[in-house]
Image 1 (cartoon, rainbow, N blue to C red):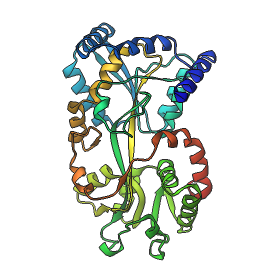
Image 2 (tube, rainbow, N blue to C red):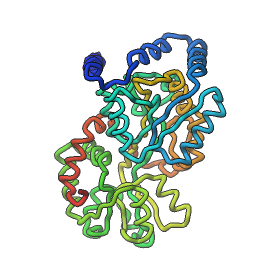
Image 3 (cartoon, helix red, strand yellow):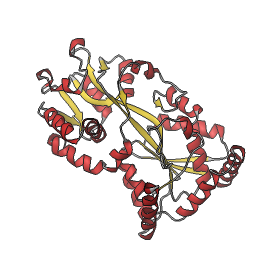
Image 4 (cartoon, helix red, strand yellow):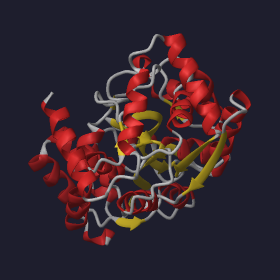
Length: 355
């Protein structure tokens, strides 16, 4: 209740400084009505509204192949709504959404992003509360209790090593293993591993986590930007190991014959990609319909077919079997997202080579 009250106060303030797009309160009132309707009436109202709106504007930073697969599936199921997509690279989606919202001109109805920094826009009143009827199928940690976000796909963060350069006996099992002399000057890390950094601090506690990170920095770490590039550099033998990358990148390049595999380090952190309805959505019903579709088994199976990790508990990916028996952990993503700028600053203090 207190958290909701804080949000309401923040929303009023955001309106006062014109950070919300026009019509934001209307969007929430329209969507809130859906929660009180029986399932059949709710569906009919969403269909009727989406048909009248005729389109949905989507901001995302998914790759083109997966984007096309999902939007093609949506158009096939709902031919009366045209998805219009704007793709962004990495964190540029955050600046675009925030700048448009501040100017009262946010064009997006739905926002998809794995960038944790985007979560701070919830507190700025940019995201609308929307409780999809499918959200009850998802476990805790894959949605927030207030209905601002849902996790529609998952990345598993793993260390990747070169199988020609690293023996099975040397494969690290815990983060502490990376502090051994064997790894000095042999590792690479993403220059913006802020989420992983935050997850380590959450798990170990701030003080102990920072001590561990400072010791890791003493291993003469190298830094590059981009997990896909990290994986490719390890495959090429430029480094023996990358501290964290995406599991799907490792599996994809390994299937092509590259000498890489992931270390089953305990724990492996899960990183969700988030799904939001924009507060100022011009097409709120079409936006709600698109969110419902992405959370459906049909769309989640499309993710699997494109080598992505689904979040739906009834849809499993091939990678799920590889993770069986391993320790995986879902960090408090909202906490990390709200502290993302501070975590990034601290990360660069601990790892000055990442600047």
